[in-house]
Length: 225
Image (tube, rainbow, N blue to C red; front, side, top):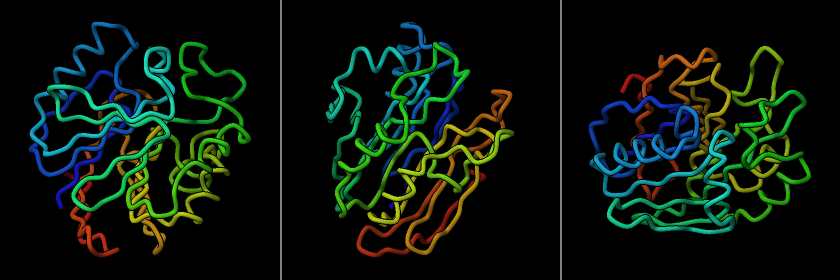
């Protein structure tokens, strides 16, 4: 199965070659306006994949206001599934999406969608079933591709749940400094697929994965897609 993973678009919409599955892990627009969400939707509609899965991120405030949590929504005419602490299946793979990330002092008040403390995040992550193959989160787990100038800023709660669930893949973004990087933890392959850096410059390519749904092995990962 040919999977393309991308996150933290922030208004950049690269041309993709198509494939089986497209995963978009949050922060979909530049400033969360209605017109920008239409632009994102038009870009998404034109991507040639059998299935497209989208979650929100902390910049997607309007999505938190307009989309229900704990819900899987099929978007008509786009072959797209929106996940919010919910799951779906595709060609034998069980997939779960969760948009949450940590609130912190000094956070931009316009970028607080789906944020909370570790107790809140743990409450949401405990909903994840143990038989998930692909886990899509906006934030990284603590200590895994989550380092910025303030140190490691991923979620401890997510790290605990990652080692409980042991998905084949954990796809995330949020921490731009680690975009375009992967770590193989043996139990799971983790990848930060942010396409922008800490200055919101489009510097990273989407990550392309070749995965056999019937086996645990990830056969190939390409960060220069």
